[in-house]
Length: 340
Image 1 (spheres, helix red, strand yellow):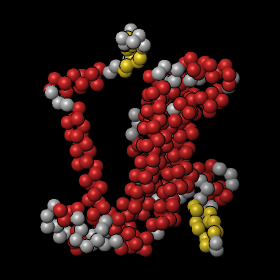
Image 2: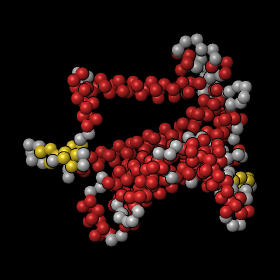
Image 3: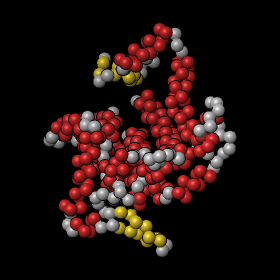
Image 4: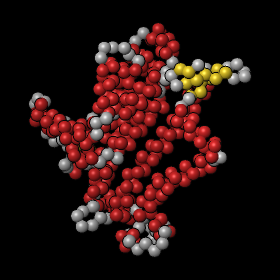
């Protein structure tokens, strides 16, 4: 019996388990079996491709960050690309001395964490309302979100910039919202930008907390929840908020972690939008700050690669932590589904 892209298979023991059926994956499996390629060989080949396209560029970036400018352009053989003759650890100290790189990193960390938390909260609420709640105009809003998903970012860049540029003038009093703010810690004054508008954390964080892709990802995850389970939850909880908080969120936790990681990575490495809405050095993020090593006539490649390595390490750490947790959660969910 075929139902919603899934088939039920009766085993000899008499139990019933769900086996996902996808025509593309079945076709690929059939072609691989006919070609006589084992899964082990295919896995090794895929791993080599990933290493070539992802690991090797990172190793080159790491090796370049430990070289001097003279050694960088004196390439003698392939090994010299990845193994410096003299390890220049002072490059990492120099990037913090030439530019306020620590301030840039703190700005990026604040923007990325706030964007990840806001996006996870807002998209999960929107997905719950679009997938599990029945209300008027739900289908129309769902279609509008899908159509807006097809609009490229370059088309909404200028309108979004104009909105944030004019926002302080629309609020009252405008001087309160557009005035420059500072905080004092230990006798040291730290500029923190405006409350709203350009050169503000509000302009850096809010656009990164809205993602249609994450909303559809969570809608798909919520649609996989058993309707019988939700009906029982509604009878016991009695409110949508309790069902959302106590039942739905724990069941889609792997998807929530995925959304949070993608939002963090997107904001942490964002370049175009922070470049547009920031004009002062105090509000720039780390990817924008690294432009200081590039000018019209030359580029300090070794310092630029050192800053890129420092910028990459938090993303890798967050990836390893989130990946381990997501794998554990997916294994538990598959085990629970197989026992149903």
